[in-house]
Image (tube, rainbow over all chains, first blue to last red; front, top):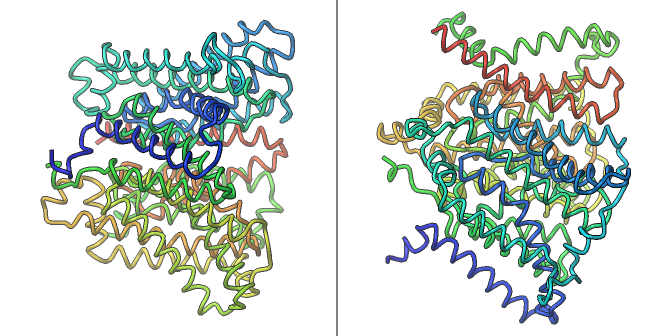
Length: 322
Length: 316
């Protein structure tokens, strides 16, 4: 295979992203004492798992050719509503069910408006997200209260353990969920339709794929996983915070893209997103460990995203698309 | 094209935004006649100017199509704001507009060229390339300017009121000149169908690259307008303009798919958003309600625009 085409296939991009993550970890271990200590690795795995959950929806939406900017708002929504209702004495299972249903409705509305009227999902999801955040703020008067039940906290706690494994249950659960997502994308009619719709939105309806239905389902799934991330973050930070999801706006997009997906749709995989999540977590930990200020970490993150994507995420020239 | 036909085509492309503009203006005039009396229109334009500037700046790359978007316009405005005040005015003591204005435009052009290089020559998806620039510019701005600082040069502060028409007028004149060149036709052709444009011999890469540089220069100008309005340097204000500016562009009838619209639409969309904020503020509601109404009206506005377009297609 010629060097120029080395990163041409999706699989090669995924392998490339995993290699970058491994190299970053190696660099961290050599530069910073204690970088590979059990506690540090556990912390990174938990942070990466939380980002990976939030990125499931973005992966699906991007493969379909959309984008979801409402993820951080839905994360904040789930975080605050779950804490508030649980604090009011509700049964936590009921709370989670309600939050999940509401999230699915929000996501479904995103997909319905964007597809049926053919409006840029960028604007729709941003607007809906702002409405959701405003409603939550109005409801709590800006000061959310409440906390997560002990079970959720220990599920995501960095010091927790899952049976014989020295990691909290979050990490093995994520592995199972990831396997299911990969399976759904690779082996089910839904997955096939998702890729078909993303690669050629014009031809997909001719193959009896209902675009509106697909968009509603996929955006609903995206909001659902964002809500799951919001509840998990509640357990992680201990108290409710409406803006807890904000860092996830660009991080989910960055993880999906570093993992080899194309924002024009039709390309990408959840395995790639996980590789992207690992890369982002490693970079973040490495730079903070090296003593950079948060602002410098942000600048470096931007630089590295651009470098990585220019390495293996390049688009084709227009002359090759004719 | 006769002036009437041109007016009609403008009306079709920005249609809904113009109706919304008239409605919002009337509502504002009824609700707060004092704030909207003719004498204070200058001050109002000054308040709206940075958003209008940001929306105009976001337009060229969106017109260029194939996912063309520049989410680094907001951070660029903040970066220009920080460099002009903190580094050039306060540290180096340069206060002459003859030096500061070209410096701001040059910074914009360089950032635009970097974005253009990444998006058209390296061929990274524009939203990712400019996300990278977004993060870099925000980080660098916070590094050179950790906290707000002032003041701005006196001449720049005078541009905040009625005189903020001046940079806006210059933007429109610049765009009017661009429209008279073959480049504008090429930009629209590339935006509508880059493959057809390529086969017709248009240098697609060059056309898109220039669009990014134009966005950068206009963004630098918008950064100066922001500096004039706040009269100081603040590292946190710039990035907040990004998404609102893009929403304004979409509201103004510029297709985010490229090839359709212009800066007049973007400016009207921005004025719509400004008037909307103004209406909601006069109701004296909490900022939470403000946010709900703001998001809801944004979605409703793009929905109505889409419905109107659909009706127009049917009528043809």
